[in-house]
Image 1: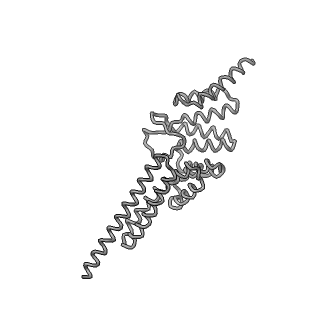
Image 2: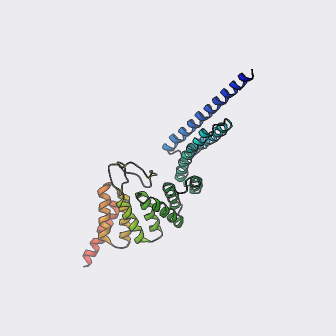
Image 3: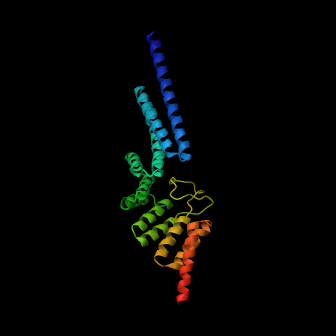
Length: 256
C-alpha cells in the first residue's frame, strides 16, 4: 500500500510539473504575440506570469531532485527578461530595462551583446557618458559590429565630439554591407547574425552627412547624403538634408 501511495504521489507531482510548464509556455507565447502587436504593457504582464510559473516549476523540480532540468529553465527566464527589456524600452521605462540588463550581466558579465544593449538603453536615457563606457567595452570585445559603432557615433555626436563620431560612423560603414534586407534603427540583432542579412548602413551615411553639414563641409556632406540615398532611395530625411546642402552650395557659388 505504501508503494502505491508513493507511486501516485510521484505521478501527481510529475503531472503538476508538466501543467505548470505548459502554463508557463502558454503565458510566454502570449507575451511574444503581444510584443509583436506592440501591446507592450500586456506583454509584460504575460511575461511576468511566465516567469512566476517557471520559478514555481524550478522549485518543484528541485524538490523532485531533478536539478539538471531546473538549471535548464534558467535560459527560459533570461529569454523572458530580454523580451521585457525591449518592452520597457519601447515604453520609455529605461530604468527598468537597465535593471533587467544588470540581472543578465551578473550571469554573463563579458557578453558584448548585452553590454551593447545596456549602452544603447543608456543612450536612449540620455546618459551619454555611461553609454559610451559600455559601448567601448562591447566593441573592445567584438569590434565587427556595425550597430555598436553606429550607436557609439550617435553618443559621441551628443557629446559634441564630432571627429570621433565621424570615425565611428566610418567604422560602422566599413564593417556593414547594405544588402536586400534593411534593419530599422537599433534593431536588437545578435552579433552572429546571418551574413546574408546585414545592417543597412544608410543611417550611418546620413548621420555622417549631418555632422559634415554642421561643420560646413558641404561637398563631403553631399557625398554622404548621396551614399545614403543610393542605399535607401526613399530616405526622406536624407532627401531633405541634401536639398539644404544644394542650397548652401548654390549660395557659396553665387558669392564667388
